[in-house]
Length: 296
Image 1: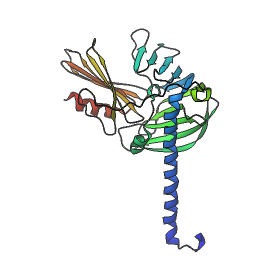
Image 2 (image 1 turned 60 degrees about the vertical axis):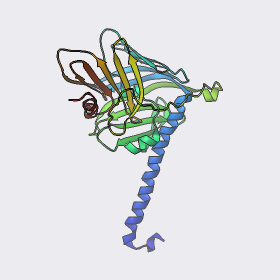
Image 3 (image 1 turned 180 degrees about the vertical axis):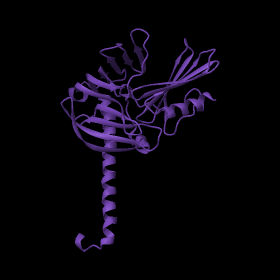
Image 4 (image 1 turned 90 degrees about the vertical axis):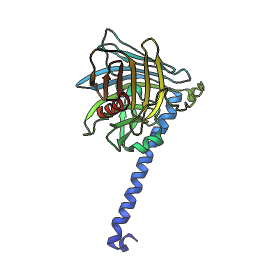
């Protein structure tokens, strides 16, 4: 039948076939995000990963235990010995000395809203690999605008859990990479020790009106009364941003910025308030966030 088809029709048929193929690949990519969303609720993960960034490599110990009182640890095994501890909704960062640095994006990789991610990123499966001895599926998430970074994610084919993550800038240059070298997982579903299901938290409005970059949503808020500081957590489904507003008078005003790996920081010190935004997004995205909320 194809041999009898007029030549002018063949490009149309080819385009339709390719379009269907790409749609299927995109659906497969989003399905891995959905599987991860389910797997994170019922799987314990413990292992060591390498964190490559800014010309250096750190060894990181990662622990995640699901449940209504979710427990987690993200600890640097060398250097400044920083660690992030999570218990339920509370997150504590501990560090030796006065060194302050951003954690890699992987540290805050939470369950992605796959449908929302699909509106902001072109997500598709691009290959297979092996990570820490496990068969992995590689998924590429390319943003549809300049507000986000490219992310390449390795999923465990058996469980759907994340085994690695590379964040690339708009020129497709790697900013940071986190990849398990050893990992052990266990499923509460398989053992019969099923934890209580984690309730879906409805997104509520923040206590103050926030102007957010396109595609970002408010997730949670924390108040530190001692420091007169408010923290607001935002996400687009993959990228995560925290914006801080602190009552902190200062004689010198102005903007400041820094970067570690894929995590940028942008802040503005006013006469009475300091605003700071931190997240695994391009610096202009954070600048837009600060300018639209802190004012000129």
